[in-house]
Amino acid sequence: MKILAIECSAVAASCAIVCDRKLIGESFVNVKSTHSQTLLPMVESLLKNSSVNLSDIDVFAVSNGPGSFTGLRIGIAAIKGMAFGGENNCLGISSLMSMAYNLRATDCIVCAVMDARCNQVYNANFKVVDGKVQRLCQDRALFFEQLFEELSEMHHEMPIIVVGDGAELFLSKFSDRLPNLKIAPPESRYQRAASVAFAAEDVLDEQGCIGAQQLLPFYLRLPQAQRELNKKINKG
Image (cartoon, rainbow, N blue to C red; front, side, top):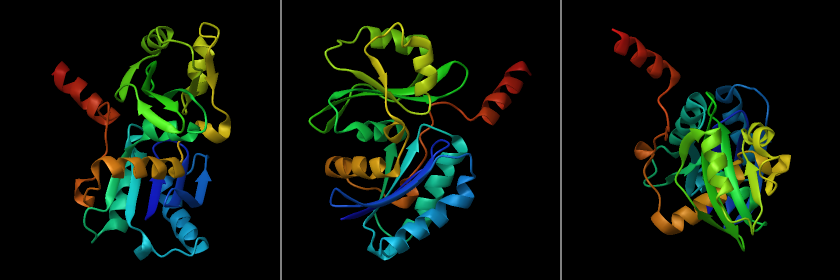
């Protein structure tokens, strides 16, 4: 089974093809580029260099949140377009869960954090043992201090490794207060399409695919424009 995955929930953008738990190819950039301009050329180049046709793809997977509102919409729109005409061949994967798959070779607690601004992070924690990823909590938005308090109460027989674009910011605040806290190396720190694909393989075993029309972004907070509008309405 061939899976084409896209990840563009934050600054980094990537695409990957995985076949039967083997990585066929991946393209990754971590620069402040416009995903709408770079993503599809990356996919086209990956398909060509991997000698894979779009018609060969069985499942189209994409990180569907949390993350950048614009980035999530771009990634989902791209997957919908490529999967158009297929039946039940799409999967939305948590951006936070996908990062836990970056560290499948290490027995640890993965603390996935994305910068949500306003002194908050998008977070979920996972336990990785013998290559298996176990979710410890649901995706949520919470304040830095709330996450610190939760991690402080965890048993520390396993290292806690922080991943995500909020990792450095979180470590700068709490590394001296949580000695068991480590940051993932750069090559394992950020969201990657290959990890989205590997997570998709496990999700496929549990729940199967959905149709392109059912594929939607998962927002933990309202978009900034909607929040500002709500403020105006409440003041009125």
